[in-house]
Image (cartoon, rainbow, N blue to C red; front, side, top):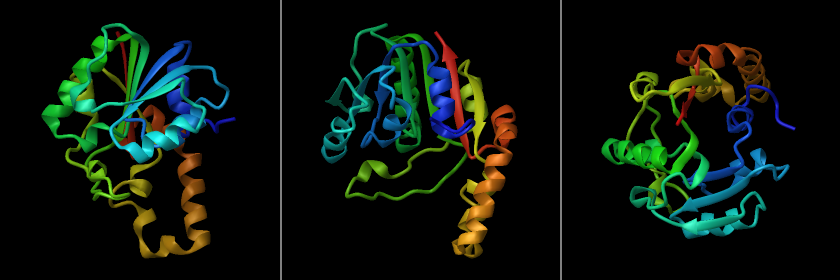
Amino acid sequence: MLLPFTYPWIIKKHFSDNKKILDVGCGDGTFMAKINFDKKYEVTGIDLFDPYLKKAGKTKAYEKVLKMDVRKLNLKDSSFDCVHASQVLEHLKEKEALSLIKKMEKIAESKVIIGAPNGHFHQDAYDKNDLQRHQSSWQIEDFQKLGYTCYGQALKFIYGENGLVHNKLAAIGLVRFFLFGLSYLLSPLAYIFPSLGAHIIAVKEI
């Protein structure tokens, strides 16, 4: 059961009746496990980092996982109902990301769903994985120019790069709980008015 307007809920909502899903940059599979807990979808995950692929393969969220560089994505046109890339584009250079979007649109039979931070969000490498470093930033207008409809998730003034959650006071348990509750209560606003969101979910019907 997913809480309405949370990030996994929004992605699952837009998966809708699409059955065959490609998860581009699947990571360790934790996120897809939240979405595909009911095994509703036949999901193929691709990633380049071996430790993540091993973990993803154990989640039972995937029919199969493949080692593949998303910058060299080479799959048949219209081979999946829906192609999903969550928190992937910002890890690529802008030209690489735009090239990936074009490839995803060819691979998708019905829909492409992309999730990304709303604007700049600094992140260094971690998990001994240099691919975790952020190399680009994305705005709502970037996706709209490509024909995507955008939705927002969480509140940027709370969870964005300079959001309140990063304030020293947020380390206090009660303060952090209050910020979480406030963000959740106002999450429908972020969904409807994506400029308020910390995250962008961009959706395009093919």
